[in-house]
Image (cartoon, rainbow, N blue to C red; front, side, top):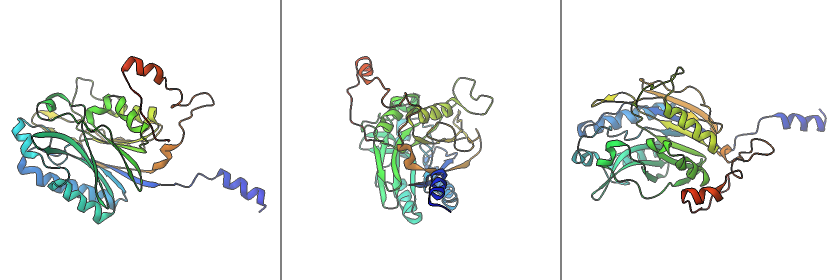
Length: 308
């Protein structure tokens, strides 16, 4: 084989992954009740163990996965809550992540003095990494939770940069945009998508939240792993339809159904999200943004962004 021919073959091969990661999204049915917290956690750990046995490096579980969702009073919500870090749920997931050498994102009710937060945590093989407190509260969440005030953090890890959002946040395009602008390679979205006015699903079985997730991935050139819950709880119904969206927005594999507990997997090169989102010789997703106009119209004050 000539040197020129060898070089030509090399150029046609797909690029070797820089950060190959198997992402797993766990769709569960946790139930509210202080007496059910231990069972909720045990079942979540069982599903996460199945995900690890399937090769997962990053496992994403739903919002409030350890407590259930439909609190009836602030006192009940408070009884379900725990400190972050240091609480029972965080400690259990730290131990799980260390044992299996994986990263885990899950949702819980956080207690910080008299305040309660709807929180997502990230843990890894070295323990607790960080948290995100939900900033957009849905319906009766406003009666017991305090809106998060710590912004939209992106956490550097050995597998890539991980951002977090929670449920209703995906309806606000600023949230995934801010996470992407801070250099997130993947956004882990923990959710309790509730039934909304019909139609709930289209002919493909997807709900609106699925499309919002796909759209956010597409317009921000970022992976999004969205874990929702299923089932019914105190009259509330949940939509399922968990999804792992690629940087082009399309699902990486099947979208989960509306009723079954299940696990979705996707193999990605996580840092490929850092590729410049240039769609043709004239359009660049980042450079085409008219921040000069947005600042005036929306009151934005700018901010620094990590290079993609």
